Picture (cartoon, each protein chain N blue to C red):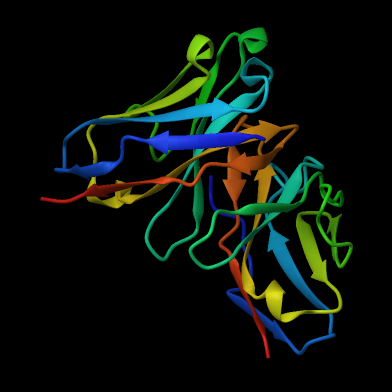
Length: 119
Length: 110
């Protein structure tokens, strides 16, 4: 069974940093691109970024809204995906999901972890 | 990258068919057959309903179908049921190797 489990969310002050993790199981992690998607309270889904797989040189892509502040990485030895978030803003408050990309669609999602940016 | 445009809400009676539109540009929806649709029930995780414009994952009811014309993709739910009440989001790959979601559509079963 495919499982994605995020962790690391919490309360952070504006300007602060936090790292989210996503541990995958039930599939061959190295075969897949992995993405982060967020959802602000009561709002829609927003794609944040992607880590490609080893075959594609672990290249990362980002949405303009987070480029330069957020960094995505992965550790295939730990079946893990990470999201390092710096210079956090109040508008970064959201539930953060990791999602598996198969083809060009997200076929599995984690349960999400909540980040609250507030003073 | 701007969000794809969806109607805020669509409603229908049980048994009816409804269609949700998803309008993008020639750089995303119009450029690739990589439109997908997600159902999100309240408090739940999004679920993939349609991929690559018109393909259904295993386990998804054949009452859900997708299509695309130009820069606009559509999701049709036929034989509407109470359990279909949810928020629906479209998504597309873009020309800048990014992804974009739609604004979301709340489906209400009357």
